[in-house]
Length: 275
Image 1 (tube, rainbow, N blue to C red):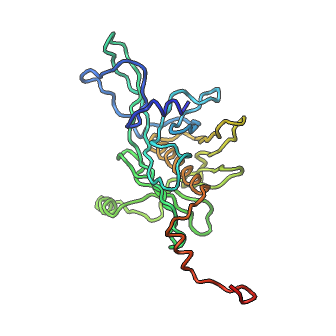
Image 2: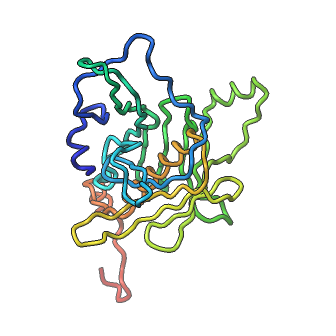
Image 3: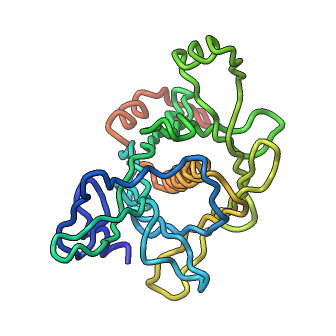
């Protein structure tokens, strides 16, 4: 399913239809979705580049609601950015008979950025959401939870410019604020997501393939109603976190710089005093 869509979707990664060219009559442009609208709990499944909602039958819907510019689980360690878009349903009028045509408008929401750790320099991994719109959670960075806390946190990132603007409005910017907490659950790639109050928001699971040759099912089960802004951020952070977990399992290939560093390391004597 996702493979067929991926082959059919041209840049900029917008879902297409088999209908003739469509147009929006003057003054009929649809309003952008309200970022504060409350959305019901849902289950999302990642297939290739696309995120599908789950139908009541348990099967993924045929229409995706989010899409990525690259398939997460086919990326090597060299990839650093992946675009994340929301697919909003819109209605246009067809040229031939004037009938309404439903299509999906690709809205840029975030750019996912992942940089690998440099252990020899003591630099940890960097995983961030870079916002493409003001109707988002803003920049988000995944970091390990502080001492005496388990898991990881999706931290709020406030630039110096934003901090100054907020302080001028009388808003005090606190350090260490975060949106979500991710703690490892039971089972492979099972993570439990909660908010700042400890309320369970979602569970992330990886279901093994039913038969040989099938792909694993990566799912995010959203347990509570969320605003569109928060749900977009949650799903995007889930994709970023899956990408990080995939990179962690990818074998590191030594570069020529790594090999030179190893060759120049001082040799040590064994217990017998022989090299």
